[in-house]
Image (cartoon, rainbow, N blue to C red; front, side):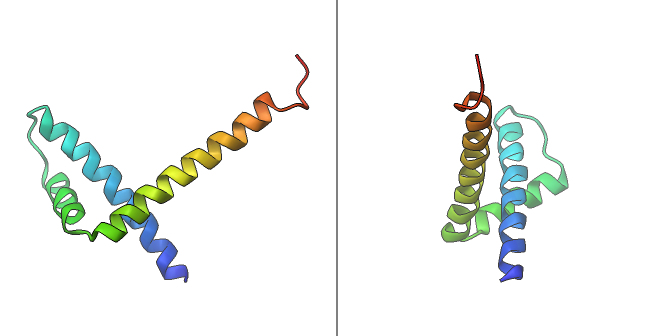
Length: 79
């Protein structure tokens, strides 16, 4: 179980690196060897693992935003 959670973080980090490489590639900039490798690994990743990584990112972002929004704009705060 702990190994699975470590893999999801690795996939998430890989997705962030590949996204940066794609953005750089679209602008016509030269990619480094590490960026090419990250892009290649992301493209070889199974659709299920990509979906899990993107879903984990979305769920974490939503959860953090919901929590902070509740704290900032919650009923306990006086105007």
